[in-house]
Image (tube, rainbow, N blue to C red):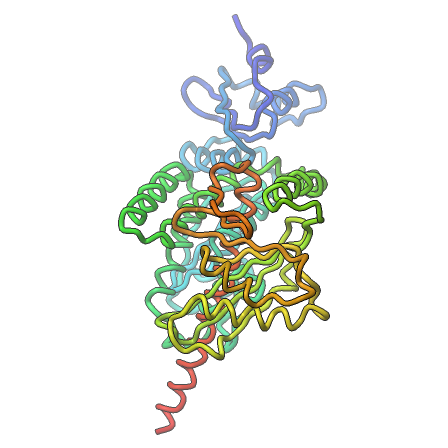
Length: 444
């Protein structure tokens, strides 16, 4: 008859969860980056008395493989909550489980906590009448913190302990949308409220094991938007799908240093392809992306984002408030932004490649601004609708789908980052104008 130990020898060297059962009842659920190695540890001589008791009582052992450690962490929490295995609590000794708390407010905040309380999350006292929903239990605090950090990049949310008058530091580093913790709720637009609410809903869905359903819904909405020729909205859903896949395709949580070590080599491969596309032997180190954001030409803004060797250099980002164009003329606005940017070559440095949001008209507009001394600057324009890259000197555009995946994703990242940054500044200007108008109206 096969013993529990014999069964453990057949476990895979993959991430996942494992379940010790007595009959049909789960008595312990655990997670592991390597199921085989983790199960082997239960049969060593120096295990605790409680562990020996659990192994002795178990009559069967099974496991569920997951694509990543992150999914193992979430699956473990899901199964502990569903089965309440008796040894999970017993084997934790004096340690507490971890929970993700989501406050019940107009703009919910998210916190990591040990304790389930009605009017308090850890040391944070909630306002009267404000409660919280809890997701968990999770067994690893450090791993859960890292998962939340990854999710926050894709779906920004607020963690401010109290309301304040100005946007918080997190909003400046793009971990928060910037309006959720401001103590002037009358300026918040319904669209902002909806966007923030969707972020929270998506995070909750992922942490409760509904990733597949969420991806299916994003795919459906992306196709629906594309049919209506709302390509900007379709791109948003596509980017969210990519973000989720990147999070769950993340390498083991303990191996992040290795990821950073690989980056330099990855960029060398991408750079070689870009140099071939541009027909140049010159190095491509500094890539700048540009986009325009406006509604019927009002409060138009331009963005400049900078990538150095493939990585965003956020300290070099710049915002431009359009001054000379008061009509919805995207080409003219691009021309103004570029003329102002090139006036700062001495203090900001010169780009190796400019990637403009648009097509041939935008590309020609930028070319008309370049002057003697700018000959080494390469130009490209990326059209959203067809996902085509227009390269200076080439009559036929290059479809992104025809490029290697890493190169395609890099160009999309530059384009999407410039769009996000321009939109962010545009919203900021509109808020400032709304506040000024509201203040003047109140004074009357």
